[in-house]
Structures are given as C-alpha cells and as structure tokens.
Length: 255
Image 1 (cartoon, rainbow, N blue to C red):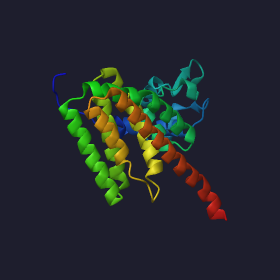
Image 2 (cartoon, rainbow, N blue to C red):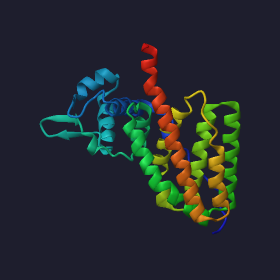
Image 3 (spheres, rainbow, N blue to C red):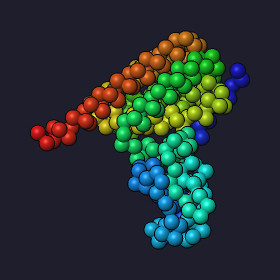
C-alpha cells in the first residue's frame, strides 16, 4: 500500500455547539435522550419558544433536525411528539454524544461493548495487513501518551491517548466504511473510560495496547485479532469492577 499520512478528523462529539439553532437542538436532544421528555410527549412550538428563549424559526429548524435523527415526528392535526427509542437513529454522531453525556444505565455500556467486540478485532486484523509507517508512528505516539498519563495519574490524558490509539488502529485498516464506525468506537471508549478512570486505582493498560501494536507492526493479522480480543475483554472486566464499586458506594454511604 502506498504511504500516506494518517489524518484523523476531529470527532464531531468534541466540537462546540454554535448559534441559537445549535443550542436549541442540543437542549432538546439531551432532554429527549435523558428521558426528561418522554416518548409520546407533545412538543408545542409556541411553548418551546418561551422555554428556550428563541424565535419560532429557530424552534422550527431545531425540530426539523431532531426529526431527521428520529427523535421526534409530527402527525397532521395533532402536532410534534417525541418518538419511541426504537425509532431513534442510534448511530447519529450527535445522538451518540448525547447518549454518552447523559447515560446513567449500564445497558448502554454493554451494547457499545458488544459492538466493539464485533468491529475492532476485525479492524485490527485488517490494520496488520494494511498499516503504513505513518499509522504505526501515530500508534506509538498514542502509547507514549498513554504511558505518561498513567505515570502522572492524569485520567483525562489517559482517555485522550486511548481514543487516539483506537481511532488510529481503525483508520489503519484503510477501509472507508469501517472508518465511519469511529463514532461508535469513540462513544464506547468514552463511556467505559469515564467509568474506569474515575477510580483512584485504575491500572495501566499500556502493555495490553502494546501487544496489539506489536502484532499490527509485525503484520500478524491473526495475532492482532487475538490481542485485540484480549484487550477488549480486559476493558469489560475493568468496567465491571468499576460498576460494582459504584453500585456498592451508596450502600456504603448509608451504612
């Protein structure tokens, strides 16, 4: 494969919201995803104008955007209402971000973990066959950042390094359709890392990531797939430990 630099576009889930229209979409979208506005609830545009402090035009455009995401719909002579979760466009980048930011149930984390187990081992195998020197250089950079973050006990830096590694690995497969799954991968990582790195004694995952890197660098597709499976299984175990600690903490406080 011809050499080309690895260029990762900024994740849209990290991009700031701009303008009244964007803020209206954000507020309504978050409220729907969080369950504050429940399925079947009617959304009166005139009331939204007052609640959001924006014009009718802004409300109308915000509802149009949310309709495209499957969050709301309109019935003739009835009005606009919140749709059932089964109708939502779950892979929409903004919806993934809202789900990440408002998720309180662990079912979401489990669903994302299952999707990652389907996608990432196959992506690692492809990366072992197709990676470029530039891909490997970015993965090494991510590993160095990961190691430094653990030494400094910097959870934010650890999350960022983890994201960089997994996004680069997926990009190294050089499959345009597979790269589009990075939003799902990133959302899964953010939810898991928020949980795991919130613990004061989180472990160093750098060696497990280095094992994946070594197989990819060696062009060992089967080894890369197996090491990625092991890495994901470790992630599930770490998340389960963090979940158990969080679930016990309220009882501990009451005791």
